[in-house]
Image (cartoon, rainbow, N blue to C red; front, top):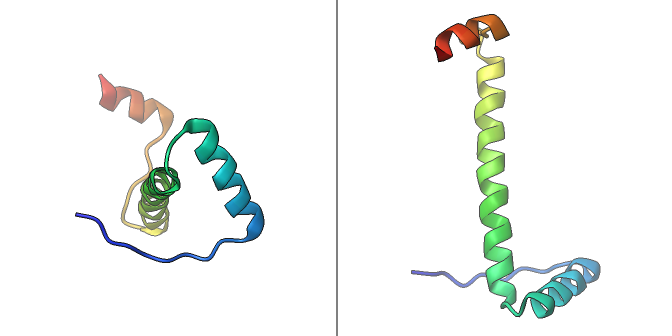
Length: 71
């Protein structure tokens, strides 16, 4: 299922999106969805890493310890 949303883009981004969509012969919706999905995944990973970095109870492993765990 999909949901329609409305987004206002700066002219330069809208123009780049148009050019890319035409060169790939794909709809703009496809490109925006793919870009947003990748951005959200990366940002969610960033938030997890940031939370772990700030968690004083979450032990940080050294490279040597990490190699031992991987064996």
